[in-house]
Image (tube, protein in one colour):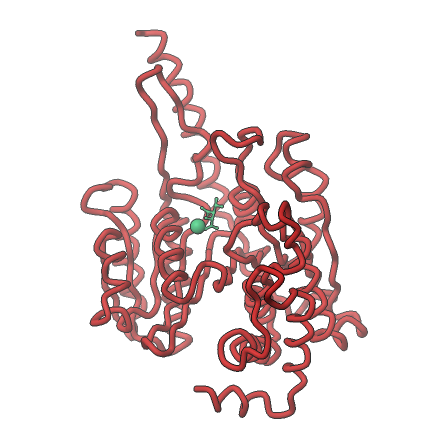
Length: 396
Ligand code: IPM
Ligand code: MG
């Protein structure tokens, strides 16, 4: 027994030391990168696994089309980064192989296709999710996920903390004995501060009068308790923004309550709760395939589709029918983030028209629907529409 306890203590000591070091780094964090001062802004396009390389190809074509002038005059560079595949990751037993991480770190923003996350019992070794690793390596602390369902009055913006909570030590849990397992959850003052502040800033900048904080602070008292305390403190700095707080269980119910759902606007949550409610929200919008997701840090940012790599589509020879919509939505978020606000707006309106309203082509994922390539062409044709905004408005 003493030996077991000694080992557990050692393990705990190591992770506590690591996290104390991390807090030190967070305290000396630099300010936000200014894209307007960069030339070129390097956009890395990371294909990933399964359908990823295929749908990224279409997203890249759309970038090339929308950013042709910027690429020509050297303001933007589009850079393809290959090889972030499960085969390569399994070969070197790393979530992100070193050479690829190095390439990634030379970019400023990334558009990333889905990457396969090994799960218990499949054929891949138990390596960490590339997503989780990238969020940590690039310190992408904010996972920003918009969800809109106009006919239900839903216009939500989720700010999910992306680097702490139940994820940060996700692969460092321990099986103390055959019968006793521990995982760890971490919240820091600095980590809570920066995500909550981002949510309140967003609300203030966009004249949104409400921020909703989601925790389970009645039960998970130390970590969620800290998150909620921080929210209370930060809210005082934003007197013009009202705020409320909900526990995650009742929150999942209220998101589907017609009497309530349109009242939520900006929502901020620790990592795992944010993971769960953003899938729920995306489903209300029409499925996880319809949502885009931004992973934002002060130095790097990464934009991705929130669906998986769909290996079955590849195995069944349906690759070319994969739907690039979610990645294209992520591309619009990327353009907005690096300052191309008008282009981002145009792309979003176009996607609304093509995928939701006009639907001249429909993607079904099978041969009875359009291919991704044809859909991308449809997007580019629609983008050239002279009265795009009028056309979009006519559907509202
Ligand atoms: C997401 C995904 C990931 C997460 C998985 C793939 C590890 O569900 O981006 O929401 O849990 O963060
Ligand atoms: Mg998720």
